[in-house]
Image (cartoon, rainbow, N blue to C red; front, side):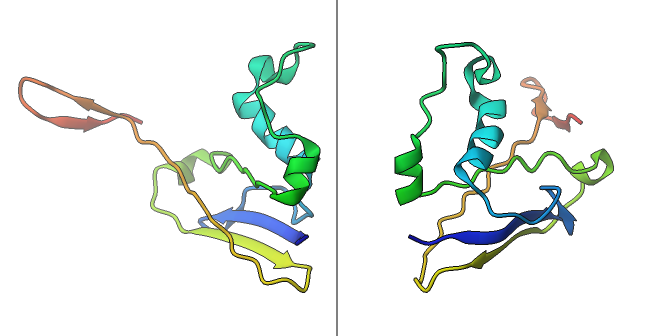
Length: 117
């Protein structure tokens, strides 16, 4: 099993996570539950069908919400960097998905597109 240490994501040179750390199953739950959990996964008996601990150990997923950067940086073009150290002797392939959204308003009569901030 491959482990990643000193993990962090940088957007425009700013750390998204407060400090470089070993990303654990608990880190994954904390990041993901806050985004997609039912009631933030705070209701007893409810969850969001996340993978269990044993499955995560076999094939870990890393999820980071990159919108935690300063507001003045959010509307500018930025670089995205992923920083980590592979602490095993295994060669590991990573699949990285970067998803973002933009809001705009379309005037269907004139065809004008206006950016919404």
